[in-house]
Image (tube, rainbow, N blue to C red; front, top):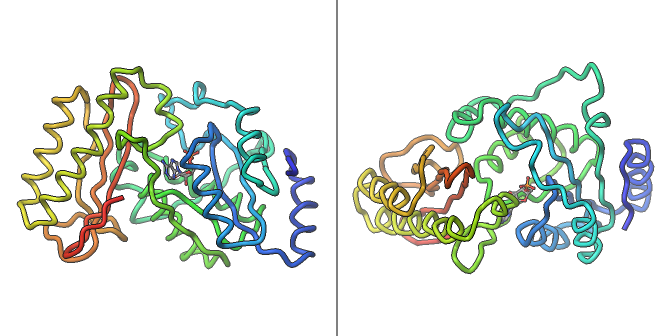
Length: 286
Ligand code: AMP
C-alpha cells in the first residue's frame, strides 16, 4: 500500500495508475475506521481494479460548537486496517494541503442541503460538497462508495455529481450495524455503556415506525410513537424523526413511492443519526 500525504506525491501515483489503464474506486473517510468503512472498501473491489481510501477530518463540515477538535484520529490503527484490506493507496493530506491560505471557494448543492441535518448543522453539506469536489478532482475516481448510514449526504453527493457532470458514479452501500442494531459510527466511542444500550432504541423505534407505516398505519402517529420511545429510552433531544421521499428527501404524507425514515437525536452530548428504507408494498429494512 502506498501512503501519500502531499498533493505532488498523489499526482504522481494517480498518473501511474491511469497510465496502466486501471479503473479506480474511492472510499472517502474521516478515519477512525470501523466495520462500516471496511464494508465500503470490500464493496469497492466489485467496481474497479484499484481501491483508494482518503482520510481527512474536514473542518468545513463541522459547526463551530461541534467535535472537530476531539474527533478521534487513530492514525496507526487506520493505516493497519487499510493495509489489511489490501488498499492500493491511502491519501492523508494535511489541512494546509487541502485548504491553503487564501482558500475561498464553497460548493453548495441547493435544494437538499438545507433540510433535515442541514437545518441543524448549517453549512455542513456545503463543507461535504466542497471537500468531495476537491477530492474527486484530485483522485479522479471512476466510482466512489458512500454509506447509506449518512443517507442525506449520499443523496447530496449524487446530486453534486449529476449537476456538475462529473465523470464518475456514486454507489451507496447499506448500513453496517452492531448486533444491537446500532449503526456503526466513529462517534459511538463517545457513548458510555449505559448510553450504548439506550442507543439501540433508535433502530428499534425506526423499524417499528417503518413497519406501522408500511402496513398502512397513520404516518404522523407512527412517528410520534417512535419519538416517544426515544425519549423514554433516555434520548434528550430529537432533531428530527421524519418520513421523506427516498430521492429528493421532500416531506411526504402518503406512502406511494420509496421513502426513507430519517432520524437524528442526542444521547447526552452525542448526536446519533440513522435511517431506514420504507417501501410501499414490499418491506426492505436496512
Ligand atoms: P465518515 O468517516 O464518518 O465520514 O464516513 C465515511 C464513509 O463511511 C461515509 O460514506 C459513511 O456514510 C460511511 N459509513 C460510516 N458508517 C457506516 C456504517 N455503519 N455503515 C456503512 N457505511 C458507513
